[in-house]
Length: 196
Image (cartoon, rainbow, N blue to C red; front, top):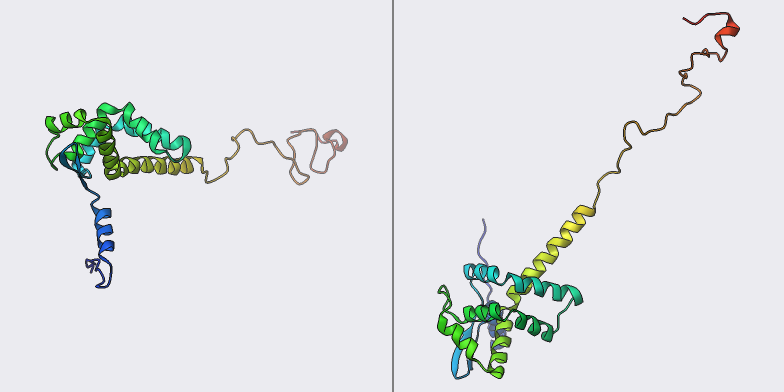
């Protein structure tokens, strides 16, 4: 019978360790940006499916950036975020929105109104909270492609020759299909027996 095992914190464990565990489980970040207190949070499951759908062009391009160098620089990612600015501002606004509710026009308008420094802070905080959401998709695709390449490249047995392509072999113990010789190697004419 299975039983649930709960992680217990030791009494002597530092409080910082418990905070680190919480950050791993819920990496939400609250910050005051341009005079507004905002919380950037991870996407929920269904919400994430919706974000994944409209962010697909961004994720595909991000996969290319990672594939080219193996590890993308922060500036490479920022350049890509800029190239997909319309999608990214929507994804950021969704991260600010109340879970389960659609992104409000107010959240989107607020993101669009930010100056460079505040926008830079916001995009960096958002990427810190939600970047792994996109990177996981790339990692899964890369792993699946590698599995498929291994599967397609593997062969289980050597191929057999085509039925009529094998060369005929002759051996001394196998009678040939030559009607001009007999079993003892003499021709019918020398034995005086006519072929039947």
